[in-house]
Amino acid sequence: MSRPGAPRRGIVEALNRTFRHWSLLPAVLVFALLTAYPIVNLLRMAVSTIEFREGREIWSFTPLRNWDLLLADSALGPVVFNTIVFVVVAVAIEMVAGLALALLIGGLTRGKAIMRTLMIIPILVPPVAIGSMFKLMFNHDFGVFNQILGYVGIAPVSWLGSTSLALLSVIIVDVWHWVPFIFLILFAAVEGLPKEVLEAARVDGATRWQLLRRVTLPLLMPALTVALVFRAILAFKTFDEVYLLTGGGPGTSSELLSLHLYKVFFEQNQLGYGALLSVFTIVGVLSLMVLARWLTQRWSLR
Amino acid sequence: MSRLSAATRAALLGWLMLGLALVVVVGPFLWIAVASFKQPIAILSGTWSFTPTLDNYADVLLSKRSDFLAGMRNSLIVATVSTAIVLVVGTLAAYSLHRFAWARWVTLGFLSWTLAFHMIPVLTLVGPWYLAFKQLGLYDTRLALILTHVSVNLPMAVWLMMSFFKDIPPEIEQAALVDGCHPLSAFWCVVLPLVVPGLIAAGVLAFVFSWNEFSIALNLVSQTNATVPVVVAKFAQDYEIQHGQMAAASILATIPALALMVFGQRFIVQGLTMGSVK
Image 1 (cartoon, one colour):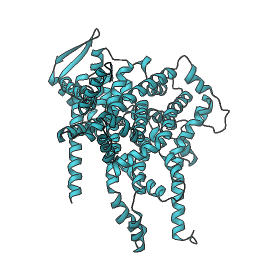
Image 2 (image 1 turned 90 degrees about the horizontal axis):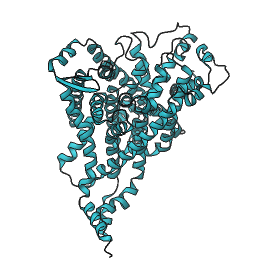
Image 3 (image 1 turned 90 degrees about the vertical axis):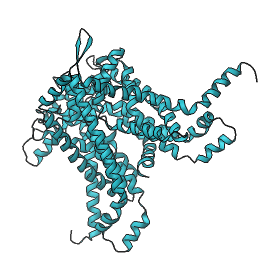
Image 4 (image 1 turned 180 degrees about the horizontal axis):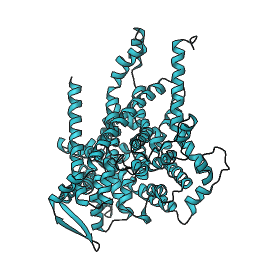
């Protein structure tokens, strides 16, 4: 071996010896600096008022002010209510439709691959583009929804501009966007169903309904749980489409939690109160996560 | 109908529902694609017969008022760089957690943290990010978007890569080590080539998420560094809404992600079925 190679070998050896540690380090650093630090900072912001004067931020310690803002925030009640309605209704429809599609397409003898490719298109479209597309389609004067209503003789409806329909319109868009996601997970599970079990049940004279209710659904339970949990989490975070479609309006009739956070932080410039709301949101989400874990564990032990 | 057997009727109903699903899924694209080739008058009248025009596309891509091409450039840089970082950092972390005997609390702590972070609405963190990047002088830079996109996409990459590593029989790696390979070269020459499908899946997903990401880009950068979603949103929000341009911009914004996904679909479905359902 020649001398010039030696230092390089030394580095390689050192890299090898410490491989275990430096392989994990970058990820830990990313999470510490970009997620843990901001969350700690949220706690500090939540008890402060932050103002900008001449381009400098000025922090003052005012814990009670943010609580007062919270109590005075008349939008908060409707926002929480809307978010719950949105998550429950949208996810329920998506689960049923996704399951139906997975079973239908899983039962095809030909054309499964092409159907799958076509079905997952909506997941890939930028949510902002979806919002802007549906904003055109919901248009009162020339949108396709009112055009179809016109064909069956119903007067045009203000989809995005009326308090009673705005949230429903957002749910329609969300269902269109996310049914394919449920479909994709459940379709993989349907394809993996043990054929012998289904065949045995059929030979034993089970009707279609019994087959679905007593054999297929129980076998799909793990996949259904995964799909439900993942989808519910994502639904809870919905922002882009609402921002574009209704901006939360009219009034607060379609304002969801993420949009409200955005408005408090960046439209009302209440960084302190926004942080307090964020802390509550994070605590709420984490308790839901612990609760879900606890429930599924109990449920699987039975 | 009464002459048909129950089975035939069920099959017919099935085909009918599939056809309906297809129309519902693909229909909006067709409608928007058609609208993007219409003149304003044709859009407003809702007619189906019209002379197609490329004016909307020309306006979105070439007009001086439009930031679309600049947005494309920003999106491309942010998505490419953040995806590259996510792949390197995520793959190393996944391998480390999978291969090396970390204490239980390390593995569990790391994975729970990524899961928790993944569940939190990202807008809770955009506020602190905004303040931190202002202090660092990184507000309104592409670097701010790259860093935040890395943190948002890292959990997905770690989970996906871990499930791919788990699929490799441990004997292969042991054989390499027994034959005198260093841990590093065993990883680089033996293990990594086996998880290329996983790298493609994670890479495509990270790129598409970054390309589509809106809520961070909306708040951490202004006009010059805006990404495609922010530009598209602007088309939909201007005081004089330009419907044709809105449709054309939506279609243009969708094409890159769609093309990439069609290419990566096989690997992503593989990863999805491996990780979650098996």
